[in-house]
Image (tube, rainbow, N blue to C red):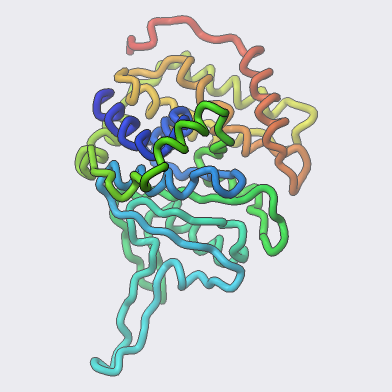
Length: 313
C-alpha cells in the first residue's frame, strides 16, 4: 500500500515541483473521505495539482469556475424540457464526477455555495424532490484567492468547517523555481501523465484507512488537543467534535499511507495545523490562519504526548 501511494506521489511530482508535503496531505484528505480548501495567490499550481492527481488516479475530473451570477442548478444539474419527447429530461451538473475542482469558490453567492454542501456532506443531489446518489469517490478541492476581496463572498465559519483541511501551496524557493523552468521549458508534462492507480485500488486503500486502529490513549490525546483550543482566551470558537473526528480520520489515513495499521501521536501532530487551524475563530467573521497555526503549535507543545504500544488492542 505504501508503494502504491509512493507511485502516485512520484507521478504527480512530474508535474508539480517541490510540493510533496501538500500533496501528501491532499491524499490524506481524500482517503479520509473529506474535502480540501486550497487558499493561495494565483499561479501557484492549485488547478494543475488537482488535474495531476486525478490523472494519476485514473478517475473522472470536473472543474467549476465560480462566478457571482452562477446558480445552484448550474452545478447540481436540472430538468430541461425536450421537444422531441415533450417531457422534462434530467441533465446532470458538473458535480457528478470523482474529483471536483471548485475554482474560486468564494466568488459564488452564498446560495450557490450552499448548493454544493449537500453534495459534499451527503454525496447526493436532490433536485425537484428526487435524490440522486453520486459515485465514489467524490472529492472536492475548493480554491480561493486570499488577496482579492472585490466581488467575493467569504465562506462563513460553518461552511469552512465542512472542509477537512485547509492548505496553502506556497511560492517556490529558488531551487524549486529552477526545476520548474527545466520541467516546462519544452512542453507541459500534464497531458502525458498516465494513471498509476485504478479507481478500484483507490477505494480499496480508502477502506483500509477506515479500518486503521486508534488506541484509547491516542483518542485521549485528540480530545486533550480539542479541549485546549476551547480554553484559549483569544478564541471565541474552538474546535468542535466534527474537527476532532476530522483529525482522527486524517491521522488514520496518514498511518495507512505510511504502511501502518495503527495511529501514533506523530500522525496527529503532523496534521493538526492543517485540519484544525481554519476551525479556530478569534472573533466572529474573522479566522486568522497564521495566528491559528502558531496557537496550535503552542498547544501541541504543551499537551502531554502519550507513550504506549499503540498497535496493541
